[in-house]
Image (tube, rainbow, N blue to C red; front, top):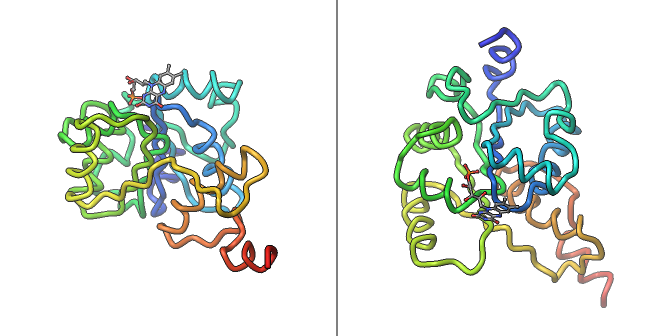
Length: 201
Ligand SMILES: Cc1cc2nc3c(=O)[nH]c(=O)nc-3n(C[C@H](O)[C@H](O)[C@H](O)COP(=O)(O)O)c2cc1C
């Protein structure tokens, strides 16, 4: 572990874990929010997450990430967030693959993302999972139920249309906004319901 990692991770950080589910743009948009609001963020990424990010975003995550944000790979077991002694504010797994979801639900802790999520649950700290898959089989559904019972929040990548989205980014923002709302972080990513209704009546 180097000094840079220690400094970043010790500041009551938020954690964003990026897995190999489709939807790297959700993670990118959340990173931009944290960067613009100068909030401490530590990113974790799985091996497949890196590949899907590059496929969907068009550049490797290492090139897209602001230098001030720490990035850990899935086998970086020396990352401070792997320990409960780092009092992370919250962890978001977005996008969350069914594989990572299953591993967290079973407490496998076989990579840094699974271990850190396990720590969040055992320390009773906020853990938000943003799964992306369709249709869902009974194993997916049972794993989500198990995680919800264990204290995690399941916030699916399921955009709504009532705020009259005009762009892909509007749809992405809807999903990211739900996460920020849950974290109690102010944002203007989507119009409030009041604004939408006022415009249309
Ligand atoms: C382009 C691409 C898109 C994928 N999309 C999904 C997805 O939306 N949901 C999912 O559960 N898995 C998806 N997968 C499969 C996962 O990447 C795969 O199950 C992987 O083992 C997940 O590992 P991880 O959770 O450690 O990242 C996708 C894979 C690729 C290559």
